[in-house]
Length: 155
Image (tube, rainbow, N blue to C red; front, top):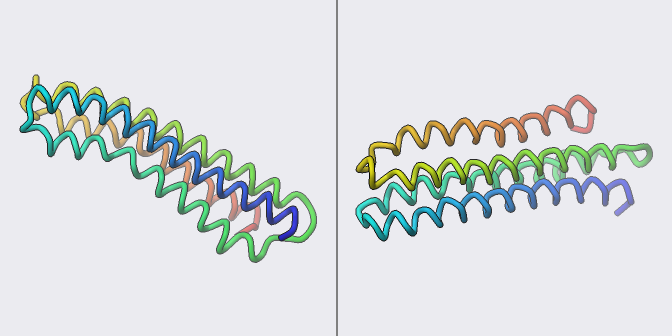
């Protein structure tokens, strides 16, 4: 493996790491609120699970970036120039988008979970819709990463 390929691979690994970190932080925030909610009203378990699991998707977005880099970008990567650094930068940008999106989506979900007993579950749909707005940043992180790799003619 050349230095350029190693940098590109590192970019993909960082993207996955950002997605995993964001998901873990977001799920932990939401699940912490879920424990309190379930202790107050055990019938809200299903709703808590739905909201607490939403930040998990950022892990998949990071994984998709890694897979694209390893399977599409890496085989055609130029042997010279700054292509490795460019792919590394794309991975870092993807990682930041997934990490912040997952963490803040968990915050939105935690707020929704905390209000489940007070609203008798009525807040579920609204909380999910608001969490989807934060999810969009994770989706855009994936899309922008793929677009950037394509514009740079690395795909």
